[in-house]
Length: 481
Image 1 (cartoon, rainbow, N blue to C red):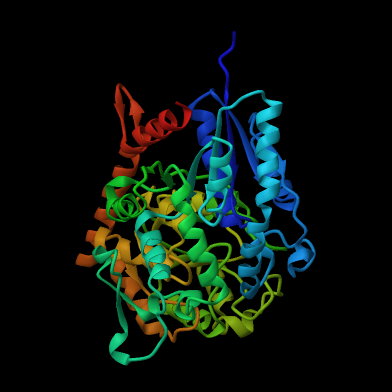
Image 2 (cartoon, one colour):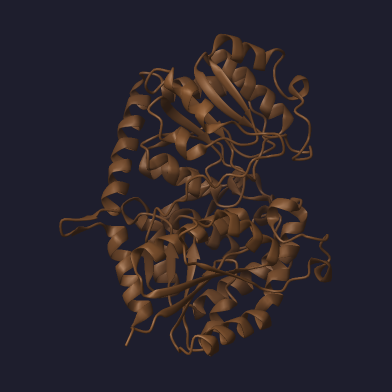
C-alpha cells in the first residue's frame, strides 16, 4: 500500500514580492521530498499569473479562493499590490482578513477529497488569522517570512511600541525595548505607515491583531541564513516561544516581470557584460515595486556621469508618474545622459526590467546599488556582490542596517524616496566601494566570505548537511510527525 501523502497548502499575501518566494518554497519542498501533495492558494488573477511561472514538470496544484475587490472599496481586478497606489494597500490587506470562511472551507474540502487528516498550512506573515483556522482543523501551521530575521524583528518591534511620531528633536533616535541588539533606529529609518501610526489608525489596528495571531502558529520559517542572521532569529524565538527555522536562501530565477515595452533581452545583456573587465560594472536596480523621485533620479544620473564607472541602470518612472508612462529622458535624466552612455559604451540604461539574477552572477559585476529588498540582497550575497544601499520602505531600512553595521557588506548611499541627495555624495560612495580603497577591498572580501557561508548552509553532500538543510529537515519532521 502506498504511503499516505501529507497535504501542504501554501497561502501567500497578494503581492508579487510575497507570491514569488512562496512559489520558490513550494518548488523547494517538491524537490526535497516526495511525501507531499502541494497546493498554492490565491485569488484568481494571481493564480493565473502563477500558472505561467510553474515549471511544466511540476505537480504543484493551484487553487483559487473567491475574492471580489469591489466589495471592499477596491477598483475592479484589484487582487495584487502591484496594481494599486500605496494608499490602497492597507485596504487590500484588510480585505484579505475576510477570506477566513472561504479558506476554512477550502481546507475542509482538501481533507475530504484526499481522505486524509494530515495537513500542513504555510501562510504569509500578513495572514496571521490562518493559524486559528488551521488549529480548528488539527493542522500544523507555520508562518513563512520572505524577509530576514533582523529586518522583520525591527519592524515587528516598532509596531509593538507605538507611537513614533515626530516631536522632541532630542528623540530622533529610537530604542527598541524588546530588541536592544538593534541599538538605535533613526526617525528617517521609519516607513511612512509606522511614522504616522498612533495605535488607532488602520495600519496599527491590523498589525496589532495580526502579530497577536502569530502566537497561534506552530513556528516560523525564514528565508535567511542562521550564520549571519542569528540575532534577528533569536528575537522571534524568545518573543513567540516557538521554533524558528532559517531555511534560506530560497530563490527563484527569471521571475521579473517586464514593463510595457520595457526590458532587455538577457542575451544582449550578457554580451554587453562579456565585453567588460572583471568586477568593473555597477548594477543599479530598485526592484519591481520601488522607484525614486525625479530629483533623486537626476542626481543619480549625474553621479554615474561623474564617477566614470561602467553601469547597468534599470530605470522605472519616478514617483508621481504612471508606471506605464512614456520614457521621459529629458525630464528625468541629465541632458544627453542615455546617448553618452551608449556612445561611450560605459552604460546600459534599461527600461523597467532586467534579468537580475543573471546580471548579479556575471563576473563583470562589482557592486549592486539596491533598495535592500531581502530577496534582492540574498541574490546579491549568494554571488558575493557587495551592496550600496538605498532603502525606501517597510523593513528595507533595517536590512541595510544589518548588512552595514553587523555584516560589513553594505554602505548606505541614500535613504528614502523623498530625501535630498547630492550627486557628489553618491559618486563618492560608488568610488569608495568599487575602488581599491581599504573599505572597498574589505567589503568585497567580506561579501565573498558571506557567499561561502550561504553555499555551506545549502550544502548536502558526502554526509555533510548545512544549517539551512538541517533546518528544513527539522521543520519537515516536526510538521509531518
